[in-house]
Image (cartoon, rainbow, N blue to C red):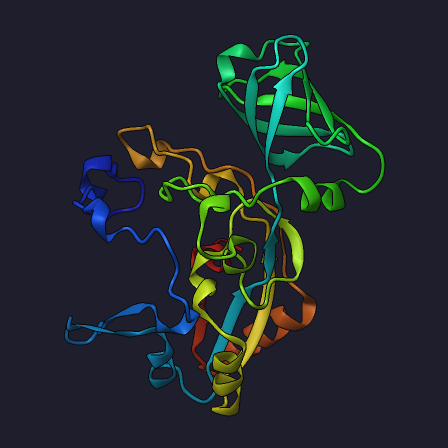
Length: 270
């Protein structure tokens, strides 16, 4: 495919039966399914994730995204009518203002006041944005991230058709990677969810070097593509941070012919 050539959205369409979309995680992270594609002969084989130790070798550099998911999903009531409004905080503009998704959005005009039942957080709509998002001004005392940890919910992906509070699993734990450190994302770097601490240790004992970067996974990771030509699809802004030591080690690895293994698309985007 030539650079600049149109790519039709239909070319990416495929059938995925709903019955094959897991609604609950594997109890043991590294026992989920792993599909392996051999680029040499085109063979496809099926394994469990722990078998990745057979495919990563001494000298490889495995790069992980250590972003941690914020409990950015909130349920407010309209101050005027008491109607429930679901809010997903997408991106912080400054100390108190957040670009947000709201549902139902039609009810939220500029000036609408929202209150959380906890009494510790209020919001006011101060703008309606081009894509239908709302710019909210939050009113609270103290540390917002701590408040969200107390009253918010983990925003599960839209293909999970259940609420986190209805889960047999602890989504606060399972929808975070074991190496999550920087509380900044509204979605998990899902490719990393299947690593366990013991699996990472095993890889390191085998001579695999493990490095981390931080990319603040945002709305763009699950925003629907609405253009016929996907080159016209506008990706949302995502902030990232690559430690100097990580960048140096990766560059040295490339220069010396070592394999750089990016864990998922969020690492590739960084």
